[in-house]
Image (cartoon, rainbow over all chains, first blue to last red; front, side):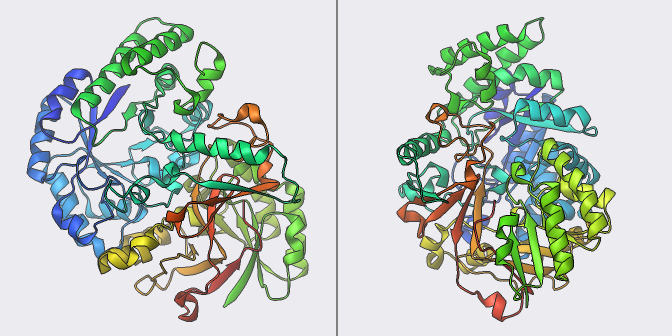
Length: 332
Length: 265
């Protein structure tokens, strides 16, 4: 099992590799795209940090990563692209391939078909936007030529196990750290980043906004406490996407047994220090899995290490796989 | 213009008037609400009696939901072999293509990724025309996307009535389009806020947990001024209402209207 790390610059390659990154994912956003599409990214990250700004830099980063036997995956994972965008997109795909990237991470079926038809010498990885919730979806993307799928955040460990037990051969990726998303990425059509950070209601993810809630009942008989409890529940919901160190590290124990290939750390745009901290945290746990450790021991150690690393207690709404907290041994 | 009625329960059959020549039936967003075999058989009987065309609505599914559909699809294929099946899951499409090639797959709203978030309307008049075109468009003007759909046997795609308007002029005419009125879906989850909503002890259970199908009793209006209009949560899905008739209807770029008399599930 490898740690799939975000990568934003040449300078980060060596530090993240030393920390334990086994794969990189990244994107490029140049001014030409942003001038034409100021509130639409090519890769689901807003303009600013979180991107390479030039393909020359990407090429150097890929070269350094490859020298360490670390593959680099290129994100072109917006949910759809229109025909008017394809001249620019082709320029990006060509630039990525010239830079030596190993795979495209994508969602849009039109782009998937385009990449296949163009014969680009890079693998196709299906992003979480591909909404693979069952084994037949894995089979579908295998038939389309994909070599890796990222499972959605919205599958339980047991459901992932059900899929991997009967799916055709396919490399798999799961989320384990940062940016727990309350809506299903591939089914969420809210547009984020519609203004700069100074205009928060337009910049923030829609699910993080404070909504007033009004309960409507089919029989007009709303239980007395339901209105109040739904308001409170909505407030909890709004905090889920807050990047307060959401984590699924305990589930690494099961994921290794299931043969999951990659653990994705969300975090394009995070400072290097944060990225290194995240990768080191997971690498220490990953190394423990190589020994003869029991599930309960691993859960205890991972929770203790989480608390030490991030100065946070485990919390149900920040837990990627909260079913592990129902098995006892801590958490609130 | 074909008019279809879209219902998710046999209780809603009373909406079926002579205005409709096609019936949509099924669950679109939650596998726990896939109708039972007796319900499907009841609806198929009425479809036959009234000589209606039929479209079976399917949601995105885990292996468990896939199993439910695998139980029902033989009934559909036998009783109504020329039925359409709206797919909102690539695995369901794979199932149809491999096991039921006579059924006609339709690309559902969840796999049509147009941006629906109402906040777009706050800036729509301030963004470049290229960006406006993106928000009003879709990938059906991309030749490779159309080739992909045709390879998959898909010749119809389902659309929501976007607040920013729909531009379909450049899309391939051989792919037919349906427009859903008046409810447009915006986002869906499996961390369902409606699940167990009347159980205070499960207040912070935000994950994939069992539920009591509370969505059949409750929906929730959601207000935030930046959204420009109220959102509605039903079950695991957020919607908005748009009752206006868009240009794509008068311009005949869609050939089917799908009427939702109630919020779908």
